[in-house]
Image (cartoon, rainbow, N blue to C red; front, side, top):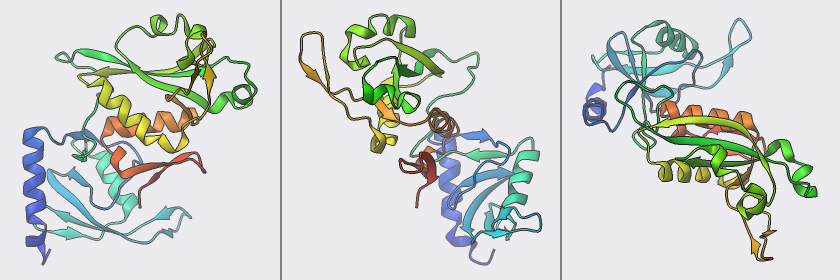
Length: 249
C-alpha cells in the first residue's frame, strides 16, 4: 500500500478505541453487509474498507463488487466483496469492529458477568378503530421496559398510550448492561419517519397523541435490533416507502 501513511492514524485510533471500549469486535455473520469506511479483523490483521466499487453480476448472476481494502501490516488488496465475506465468515477469529457512533448497545447473549437490564418489546393493538384494524399487521408499539411486560400491559385498554385497547406481544429482545432510555430513544429516532400519527381520547376524554407506535413491519424491526446488536446501525436508515432498512448514502 503505497499511501499507507494516510491510513496509519485510522488504524491507531481503532486500536485505541478497542482498548477503551469505545468500539468492540463482533463475530462476522454469513453474508453480512460490508460498507465503505468499516473495519474488520481477518487473519490476525485489522482491515479497513477504503473503497467499494460499482455493483456487477458475476458468473453466477449474483451481485458483487470490487473492494479496495487496506491491512494494518501496510498491504492492500482489490478483493471481491463476496470473497471477503466468505473469508471473514470462515475465519474463526474473523470479526467486525463496531462503529463508535452506535457502539455495542446490548448483547444478544448474556455472559457470566452481565446483569439483565430490561427488554425491548414489540406490541400489536387489538383496537377496532378502523385506521388501526385496517393496518394491524404493520402498526407496532416499540418500547423498552425494566419490568415484566405482562405487568406493563395489564391495563392497556385503560391507557391512551396503548390506544385504549388490549395488545398482544409480538416480539421481545432481552437487554444486558444497557441504558434503557438511550436505547429506546435510538430506536424511536431510527423509525421516526414512520411514526403512526393518531389522536386517541383517554378515559377522561382528553385527546392524547401516543408517540411509541410505528408503521413498520416486524421484519424491519428484527433487522434493526440485529444492526444495533452488531454495532452497524449507524450505517443504515429506515425507508418508510420501501418499508425496509437501507444503507445510508
